[in-house]
Image (cartoon, rainbow, N blue to C red; front, side):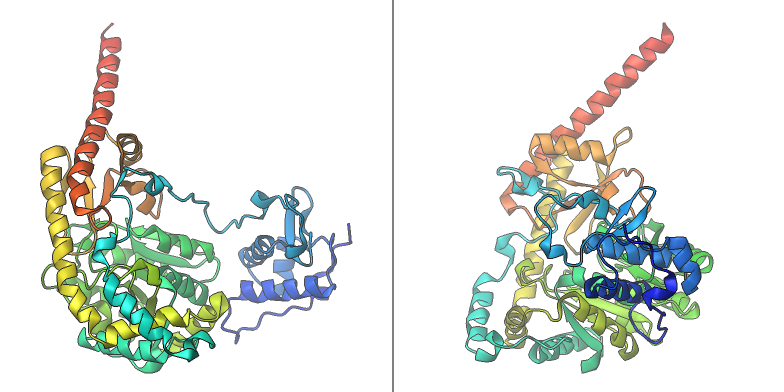
Length: 498
């Protein structure tokens, strides 16, 4: 094994003017040293503690950089030896030559995809996607054909900020909803999830804190943790996030930003009222804390809704996130971020570092759909169809699952149902799967971990005529879980009386 180089020999000094987080600066410098041969295979890197002291950085920053090198297949950690260079080009590795579990980032908690949706005959309330009947297939097909007539789309990549025609159409749509932004303040992303990854990469460093609702969308807190941040949940009530609890978290944690879904929140479906929105904006402005507002369900309203946080923002603290996946088609994988220009100067390079640009062809399809009035024509029947599905689910649950309790959602895709006492979400999810229906247990949405007494049901994913069947199967699963608990309690009582 090569002798560990002295920290001075690695030739790195943090650049505070670089928009990249310092741990990514260090990652890039070390990766270049490895690929150029200055750090050869077998070299032991300096200890995280020693290197952090030399650079005047936190040990967490060096740990994060070493973690990125491990994820790239350039470095491996060994017990008692620390981090060792194992390759100068990970693409040259032979099959099974890499101990992949050892390369897993320590910043991201492992998760496993749920494959229950792939099983035929299962009613999928656990999905977050639209049933094919809810997507404007004919209109999108026509838009795709029109887009292909432009030879430029097949020969050039889109600009980093997004295709000009799409950005213009999105800005016009946003203005109709009270969000006024300039051309340089909108960034097209590969779906809403990539938008979260862009925000995380641009604004977070290891050791930062993000505050969010609890429960919330798990893709968000996973993205923030993958950037090295800590995520803290704030309690919600029937209306949404509690402003008093949020203020306490701002005082105690001084977060990098607050992540909120104020309009038909995922997973609860709750709608934040106008006065509460104004108070939250005032709080975050007073503490100089940005808000990342997910508005991906904002257009799925069954009645009137308050203005978005972005449209009410007078202090320039809100990054507004939208998506076409929940309203048009998940196959487009298109989202957008609207942010003050100074924030966009951080977000755009972060986006470019992820994929250079979002595919131009899908952007052109959505642009044509928006500019030709397709979206305006699609929304009314789309909302009506979802409201019909919501009502069908409520009626079916009342009949087959009287043990559940819920607040009726006024929009969005989800119903958040409280389970009866003695039952937990994880066991109900498992029992429901055995009965042929997939629901999503509330544990998945808890940023602070722990058990949950709720399940999320998506009424947009199954076919309309499957909803009653799914509710019937869920009722059977609930009663089987409750029966097991009552039998167990009865045995415990009988044993105690002996």
